[in-house]
Length: 143
Image 1 (cartoon, helix red, strand yellow):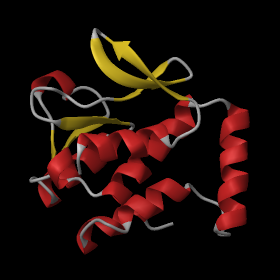
Image 2 (cartoon, one colour; image 1 turned 30 degrees about the horizontal axis):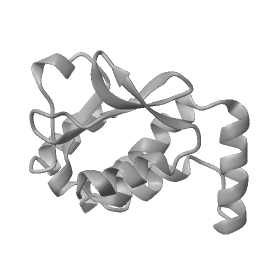
Image 3 (tube, rainbow, N blue to C red; image 1 turned 90 degrees about the vertical axis):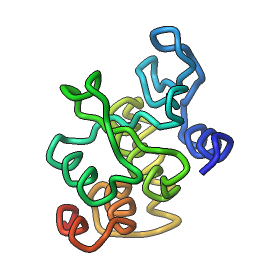
């Protein structure tokens, strides 16, 4: 994935704005950090990734997912853009977006997705991202 593709996916979420975070170019939703690409290694910072899920991602897809000592105590993972699957990125970002966006935006998003792709409840983004993981990792995301 290129930086341009990353930007297009990130900015497709309602309410996303480009804004600095700790002096670095980043994206925010509702004034809260959403994501960014690290200059050091061209990796996306992906938030809202529980530690057990991060450990599994590191084990199953080490060419894509990693983290540094700075991020070890945070529920997040770094993902190398060149190896990151766009659908996985969308799923991870949707999870973060749902926690950061205004309730009305989330409700409107859900209504638009249901009319386009009706499905039974749950968090749509997580299951879409899980579909792109190897089989042994998919079991974590089964409803």
